[in-house]
Image 1 (cartoon, rainbow, N blue to C red):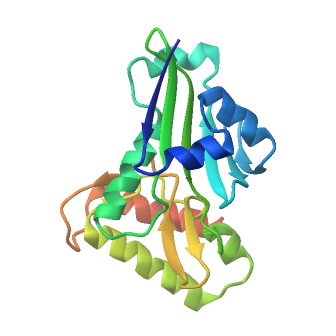
Image 2 (cartoon, rainbow, N blue to C red):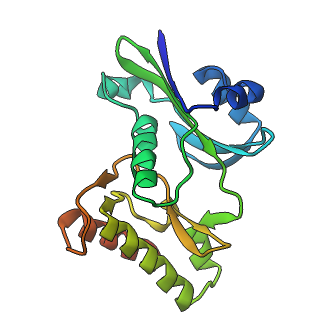
Length: 204
């Protein structure tokens, strides 16, 4: 087994204090946190560690691990997308750490640690709570700003967008397949796909 970590400057002491010192330890700590979402292979958990952290972990099922051979985990791709977003001036929680544990080049487990964005909820929850047409327009304007800056989300459903309730600004999350292209107001296929995904999510 081989474990590889990428850690942001100044984040090591925070990780150590929270007990996030290995992929297995991250998953153990997450068991005592507040689970926000999960499926058979992964979970997103709020962990109280002085300041709250969002810990996302993934454990591919043994029969699917061959698909991960020498490929970056979704968690590492999402961290890379987050850095691109920040470089574009698009608000998103900055990655504190990413870790991958591999056996023979195949992914056994991966973790992404970011600050938990307090005072925010998913766009799907916010819209379902009756936020209103003006709120929906605010989110549409945020999406337009992302697209004009050159960002394409790739999985642009409301569940993968947070709303900062203080500013009503949309914050992209859950975008391991996001990409950055040249800025501008043109409509290309990835932008059209984002808009279609958003419309389906809002309408469901």
